[in-house]
Length: 73
Image (cartoon, one colour):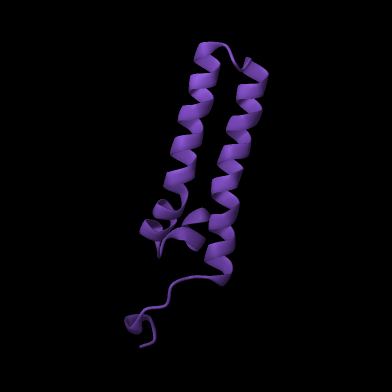
């Protein structure tokens, strides 16, 4: 089902999701390894990070899809 919505511009989606998700996951993993976070907090933060990357992507795909000249033909 996701390929139906995401197949045409996977590069666009990847670029939107990569920056914050990578930094956030590294920061939460550091917190877990140093003892600043317990397993429960780590799980919650990881879920929030994934949602914070996926939801803007869905919104961008719905209303802000880049239109190129070749798409108009």
